[in-house]
Amino acid sequence: MFAMQTILRLPALPLRRLAIDGLYVTALNVLCALLITFVFSGGRHFWPTLLYSMCIGTTIWLLIDFARFQLWGDQSKFNWLWFMPVLATAVLAGVFIGSHLAAWLLGTEANFMRALRGQRGISALLFSVFATGTATAFFGARDRLSRARAEAAMEKARAEAVERQALQAQLQLLQAQIEPHMLFNTLANLQGLIAIDPVRAQSMLDQLIVYLRATLSAARAQRTTLGQEFALLDAYLGLMSVRMGARLSFSLDLPDALRGRELPPMLLQPLVENAIAHGVEPNVAGGHIQVVARAADGGVELLVSDTGRGLDAGPGKPGTGLGLANIRERLLGLYGERAALSLEAAPQGAVARIYLPD
Figure 1 (spheres, rainbow, N blue to C red):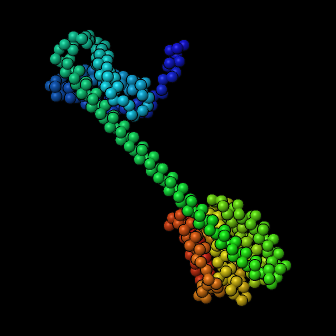
Figure 2 (tube, rainbow, N blue to C red):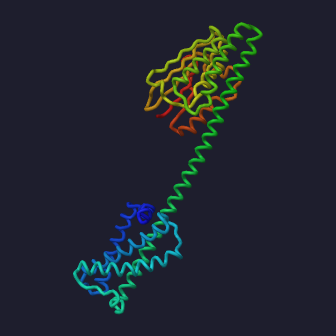
Figure 3 (cartoon, one colour):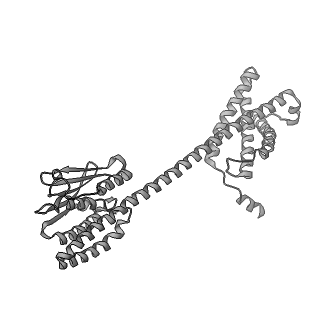
């Protein structure tokens, strides 16, 4: 029972790594057999030499790896001071076991102690030590290279994680700037309306409460859908139509196939605000605002158009430029150069165009 529990506690051997190491050891054994045969033995007895090389080299490797896994587990870092006795013991045991195994396979008699007393046996032992040292140095260098690559990959992953966190914090800051911008504009309009039309001001305040309930949680989300974004625009334009009355009309065009398309929240509202503030509101006759989403060039195109004063007339009132700059920075942070924002003149009014890649 105790022996069974001991076996169950043995660390699992990495079979894939052992298989790869076995290929390297086999190649080294063949190289050793070629050197012994054609450099030291005048080209004679290659096949028996190859068999001895395979048996001795493979046995030494298995003993070293077994001892290493039992003492240090699957660790690339281990104590070299303690490893050297393991290495020496494995060489002696490997030469003894491997030579007897090769002799048994060849049907000859092997006398390990008598062979060691001869110059040929000592040379074979020294050659085994040299080959084992070469293999150990090779595997050690490979392990150090693997550790360096793993550490570099981990460092790169950490740097990318920090960069993503910084980018996310920047995007959240940019997104948060939209909310007070919209609220200040709406409250300023509400303040002016209270003095001239208290009934409409009360209606506008009711609409503002409904709008805020619908938007404040959504505005702080990292992602939203076109269906949710258009629902918020409907609430916002409904709020603005209470203030402007018949001078403002609007339409929203969102195909059903695009309702689930994800995008950053509060991306379209600044464009709608600009269309009202600089295009429709300063126009004596008011105007119409249309928001359209459509598939285009493997992505989605979003258009906010108005029939207001147009770009040539200049801004209807002084602006901060926050809305467009905010959108451009958010698009650049999320999509890089693949997304685009443009503001174009239309036959009547202006068109803001956003392209989002898939």
